[in-house]
Image 1 (cartoon, rainbow, N blue to C red):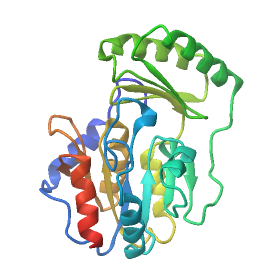
Image 2 (cartoon, rainbow, N blue to C red):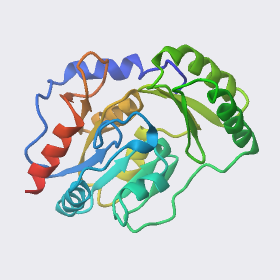
Image 3 (spheres, helix red, strand yellow):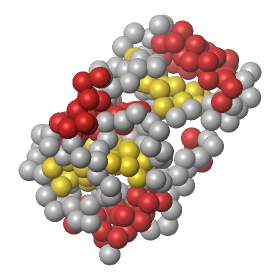
Length: 263
């Protein structure tokens, strides 16, 4: 997905034939669950490394995974190494870097885009230029790199232009926009692809997918879940165009829903 792009008109129009879902379900019988991380399970933070896992969340996710027969996966733009630091010792299914990295519940080795000298050179250039822009932060994700401008929203145009220029020098990588962030990530995979891969295998294959996310980076995940007979919810204001079939106000509401399910 290139900067400024959205889901297709066909995907957006698909929501019109389904009723709006006013609330998350009280039970998950027959479902599998796909959850984004930042802005969905975790409150957004000013800096990428400042996110906090609330007390009890990992235990609740672990219990919910057991109740679902293991059919729970975290699907995030973060690298898997970062997720594993947030949730040490977890046994969740994981998809990182928008599906470029994937890990099964037994801790199998993730697949990932190979390193590239041009990408490393691009990172150095971004760090050098961003150091002159107060409030613009560089997040090195290994096979990907992101520029965050949450602390300097007036820099949006400059960040986008710089990332477009950078992407032209790194074939095989593509741009992904999000909330106050532009990312250069491996091409060829997105969160929708991650869901489809999980759904090909047990314990997901016999269940109906429920996907929850908060950003444009999650729209392909919503579209994939909807197309497979499942459903989707987007966290945040109702003003954003989305193919999700329901809305949730805040990450806190998602966490309370999970706690209610496991209690």
